[in-house]
Image 1 (cartoon, rainbow, N blue to C red):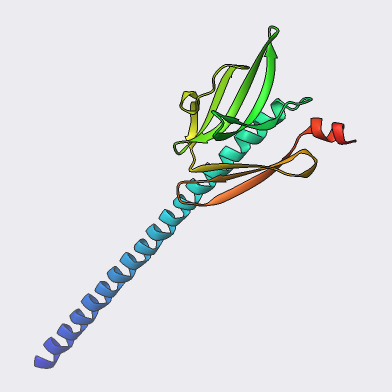
Image 2 (image 1 turned 90 degrees about the vertical axis):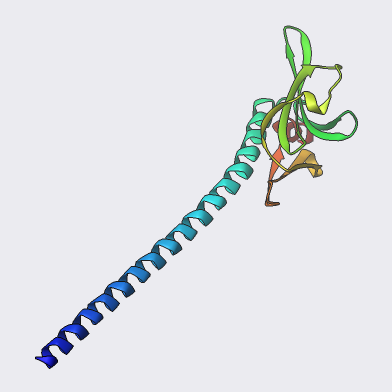
Length: 165
């Protein structure tokens, strides 16, 4: 009788231990999955900021790509900007894309009007925007997000291609 009780107790202890081990493994798998999910979400957010800002600037450049349609300039002689001139109803305007106080901004004003960096419309969060003129009318646009991740795009204006041909 004692042996039957002892065997029953050992079997019960084994089952409880096995159940506890299963529970710990389940918690471990869930914790690893949560970590992978957080990492994937963070990388996706970084990619979104970098790629969306570069795509926005590239598309704006393509829309305004005409003779002299894209050039580098500055706002208030301090803030570098990508400038797109345009004419509406025989009046000249400029659109400026630049980085100010941790945001990518766009400013649309009459040509010759004062261009103050804080006047632009906030497009999205962006730590820095670097604009660099290269050979043959190419422009390197580098963006840096809040976590110091960088991405760049090279723009070649069609108007520059025609002028150099």
